Length: 494
Ligand SMILES: *Cc1c(COP(=O)(O)O)cnc(C)c1O
Image (cartoon, rainbow, N blue to C red; front, side):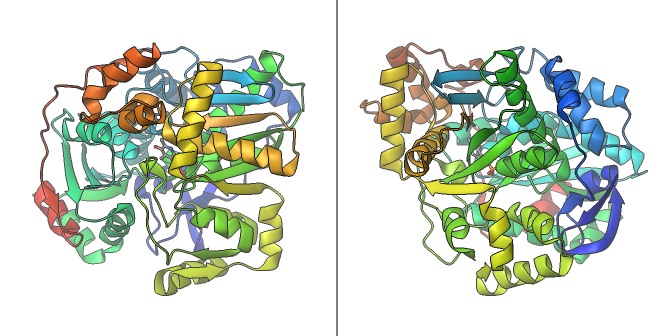
């Protein structure tokens, strides 16, 4: 199967090439030329397998230049029992009639980013061999909090690689910050940026598209790649858990064969929910995808009006991994639905120069037939956490609460009774001050020290890596200006 760029369909490349490069030269994202189908029979077979093998069977459809044995070895390593604290890997929990939670945070960093970032280093190092790349790779990451840590864990001490992570200095939780700054490994560096996530992401994109820097680094034996969800190797493993959740519901007798379900997804960069869209196009019985935002509701407005407008205030919320005004992966959706590289390139140029774009009514009609959208502010998210804990004895994090609350609003307003899976993207112990606050407890200690407090208050155990975080020392304390990324990269690779 070939991959092409969202902005230029003449750029054609095998999957290993797409994964090694991360981003296409002219700034577009790589997308598969078609989406393979999984019919009812194949779905039935998939449901007889465990998570790791489900991953192999789905990924192999997209990665024809990888062997099944390779993928099996990768899946066994990525989702092994020393990495994930449950054999189910991504378990589904029932919270009430027609309401389910898909827990995606049982990996080493307690956020759903592990689902893809435990897999990506395997896909990428194999891709380098397959493409005959002799240079060493430096992974650059812009993170709103969770990607950075998950990528650091995935790539630490992986031979032939280095990894450099940029995070917005005041835009991540204390726990997220300490998780990153205390990272171990000989090939890692972490830097704070004096700006927000969009500054970090734009900065990294600029570094990637600089031909000058590329040549300079090539001369010293390095090339740059990305672990952000703009990389196809990040997105692909995320398709798996939509199928897996469906299978689990089917196997538990919660749904009938062929029954359509909804998914509600806490959304930032639009990677997670896009994987759901791809699963649906591949034949998974899905009725609607609910795109949930926090107060940074640029996507909610887009789905309602057809205008994407990032010229608006940026809010720091209690769900920082969704504090994003430029949702990069929306580009892949526009590419799929418009079928035109020129259209996408024009819209993205407009976004860059004007900060906004509008899509055609025909395109909006297609989008509206699949997606619903809604947003929830901090206060409303906290009441969701409190109510669900009191009524169901279930503790959720601030991001999951946004998606759960938006899902309930959607059900009420639309009357749609379709069974719905809400994606739970982080452990509540990553966002201790806000979660404690939601439960009516004051949290005036640093986040890492509140992990045990939250555990005592709720009777829920913290994931082990988080429980061990308090008392760890920061190794990386530097912060840099918004325009300092080039120098930081040079310094790291000299
Ligand atoms: C990254 C992240 C999100 C947003 O996912 P996208 O793929 O960027 O839309 C939501 N919740 C948490 C906890 C995250 O880490």
